[in-house]
Every structure is written in C-alpha cells, then in structure tokens.
Amino acid sequence: MSNLVSRRSALVAGGGLMLAGCDRIAPTRPARKAFLGAESLTYRVNRLITPRNALAPEFSGGDVSPIFRSNGTAHPGSPDYARLLADNFASWRLRIGGLVAKPLAISLDQLKALPQRTQITRHDCVEGWSAIGRWTGPVLGPILQFAGLSSAARFIVFHCHDDFGGTAYYESIDLVDAFHPQTILAWALNGQALPVPNGAPLRLRVERQLGYKQAKYLRAIEAVASLDQIGGGKGGYWEDVADYAWYAGI
Amino acid sequence: MRPSGNWTYRHRWPTRLWHWLNALTIFILLMSGLMIFNAHPHLYWGKYGANFDPSWLGIGPTPQGGGELRVFQAHVPTTGVLGHWKDQHGHIQTRAFPYWATIPGRYSLAGARRWHFLFAWVLILGGTAFFIASLINRHFSRDLKPTRAELSPGHLWQDIKDHARLRFPQGEAAARYNPLQKLAYVGVIFFLIPMMIGTGLAMSPAFNATFPQLLLLFGGRQSARSIHFLCAMGLLAFILVHLIMVLLAGPIREIRSMVTGWFRIREARR
Image (cartoon, rainbow over all chains, first blue to last red; front, side):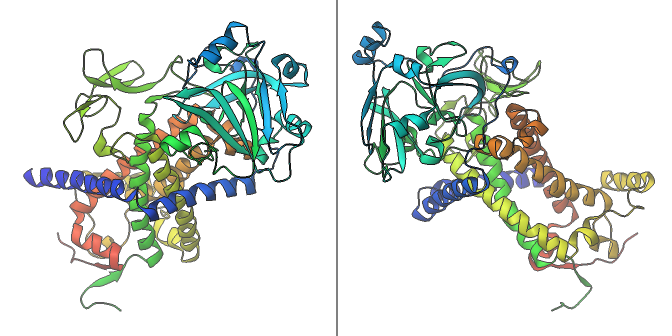
C-alpha cells in the first residue's frame, strides 16, 4: 500500500516537475520563438488551404441563441461616448484614414444607405462559449475601395471608443479578411439596433476569427503598412496586454 | 546488436521515438487543455452554448463555499480538487481545475493556448510521420492488428480474466501484444487521437470555412467541444491504465524495451 502511495506521489511529483518546467520555459526566448512560429504556421497553412472567399457557416433563424451574451466592455464609460449615446449617435462619425487616397467621415445613416448584408453567424469567444446571432451592415471591402486604399496598406486597424483601465481597445486584420465577403460593419443584431453591451453603434464582424477580433464601439478605421507603431505593436488590445495570438482563426 | 541471453527485439525505432515524443506532447496538451477549459468551465451540446444556455457539465464553486462537478442533474462534491482548492501559496481559488493539473500553473488562457497550439502541431506532424512509418514497417499489420482468433469472444473473455487476476503472459507470448492491449492501442491510435484532432479543428472558426462538413459530422461547435473533452478524458484513462500495467508487468524491462527496443523474455512459469 505504502508502495502504491509513494508511486502515486511520484506521479504527482512528476506532473508538478513538468508543470514547473513548462512555467520556467515559457518566458524564455526559444519558447517565445516556438510559440510565435506555431502561430505563424497556423496562419500560413490556413491561408494556404482555405479559399480566399470561403464562407464561415451561416445558420437559419431557428439556430439563433435565445440570449446573445456580451463580453468585455458592457458600457464605455467615457464622457464622449455618453454624449454620442445621448443624441442616439446622430453626431457619431466613422473616420476612415491612414493609407487611403481620400479620408472619410461617415455617419450612421450613410452606412445604413449602403448595400447591406445580413448574415446569421456564430460568435466564438476565445474562452470557449459560442452564441449565434443575425448581423446586418455594409460590407467593409467596398468602403475601403471607395476611400482609395493605397497599395502600401497591409493591415486594417479598428479603433474603439471603449478602454480597459485607460488603454484604448483596438484590433487589426489582414487584407484577406478585410476584403472577405462576410466582413461587415454591423449596426444591427437580431433585427434591432446594436445594443450598447454588443458595441453600439457599430462593430466589426470578421467571421473566420474569434470574438476578441470583433471590435466593438468603432470610431475609426486606419489602413497601415505595419502594426509596429499602433498601440503596443502586437496588433490588438488583448494581444498587447495578455499575449493573445494576433491570428485568432483557432 | 543483440544482447546475450533470451532477448527479443520488440519495438522498432519509429515506435519508440513517437512513444516518447507523444508522452510529452499528450501531457502538455492535456494540462494546457484543462487550463483552456478553466476559462469557461461548462460544456454544451449543439451549435451554440454560453452562460444563459443549459450545460450538461459544469465545474465550479458552490454557494456553500465548496467545489462541485455537475453532470446533468448529478452533483458531485469536489472541494479541495475541483472548483475550490488551495494554490501554491495557500490561497483559495475557485477555478475548475487546480494549479497542479494545468499549464501554466497560474491562470492564463493566452499562455495555455500558446502551449496547446504549439504541441497540436507536434501531435499532427509527429503522428503523420509515425503513421507513414508504421505502414511501411508494417507495425500496424504485424503488431497491432488483432487476429480473427484473438477477437473471438472466448479468447477475449480469457484475456479479460487474465488481466483481472493480474496474470500476464510469460515466455515468448510476452513479446507480442495481447488482445486487450492491441484493442487499447488501436483505440488510441485510430480513434481517440484522430477524434482529438478532428474535434479540435472543428472548433476553429477559420477551419469551419475551410471544411464545414467536419462541423456537421460532430453536430455543431459546442458538441465538438464536449466530444473533445470526453476524448481527452478517454486518453487520460488510457494513460492511467497503461502506467499501472507497466508497473505491474515489470517497469524496468518494459521501459528498457521502449528505450532500447530490446525486451528480455522471462521463462514461462506455472
């Protein structure tokens, strides 16, 4: 019996040793290189095997989640946002700038007047849960083209009204996802104006990636050649503060 | 080079290499997977599932100040291990799986995902190489494929009785895998590991666009997540039984044969 017990504690100790080893290895330079190499491999292989315009699954009305959970910021606390919300976003403008020929400032009504796409898709949080909702909004690609996207642009950055402890939320995607037919700027969820916890007045839907890429409370879109000078340089709020992967296709 | 005495060459090098690589890989995937589970410790069936939807499994703290595992309507108290446990510093934590079972040891979903997706590649690339090698060196057909006779009910029943009495094959018979052993290895190599990879890919929103049929096969993303968890528990059960069997069958010669390939045959005893 004592033999069995000692074997068991040996197993537990073995597990603990490995765990301590992993925690010690993780911050080292070779481990970092391996982690980033794996992310880059996943990204490249996915781009290689997935047709550019392959669609994320779309669902029927009967598949919609009874309650669409919100996550992250439930209400941006800034006075600016409070003012915009008070007049129902009449004075809100979406600024489009960076590497474009003609920078734009678009009102919500102008966005609603563009050709619209409605899609019932699944929102997958990095935590593991999923919710299905019906999104409506204009497709991003034609808007970027209208603004005269420069050939030097490689990423599209989304700046948001909300912040976490003083750091503004932002996200970024590559041009493949920016020009994907399901990448829309959604102003409606399940046939209603986007509720505040879900990102009113406008949020990004980039359906082949996880929830933290779906930037809420949009205020500006910026075309850039490199992400180095944006925020902490890793391409997004969670990427900067917690080392989440920039490519969130898995 | 054959050592002196009654030895037999039992494991070819691709089998040995993959065994040890996999031992490391599966442990890291299991432990980082438990950390990922900790970020949302509920499981659902179907296409969607979040906090407001009914879950079939949940792990967490109870209002009474303990921890519990809930499976459907069954509540199992797990205070001290799941949902309510003390960390390295003696502080109470209410995450699902405790620090000694997860990678990293401190709560970090982002860190766990880094480990998980790095070693997912090791599993896929190493597994593919092993698969090809085992087809070429006929490991599958010679060593793992049960014969028709071995699968007869009488033969299987005899093997189950032998295992229950901890009576293991002696002599030349110990050099080959017995029927239950073959079925366990076949189950892991041809079912559990492919299921882990399939359900893992089915959870990827990008791969859903690449190959939507996989999602239909598993009945939706949250079903895939549940099956991923259940198959991981199946792998854990296999590892525990496998380790116990190694200890009972003679750990020194078993481990030596998986390192060097050479297995020492003991004389059959009555």
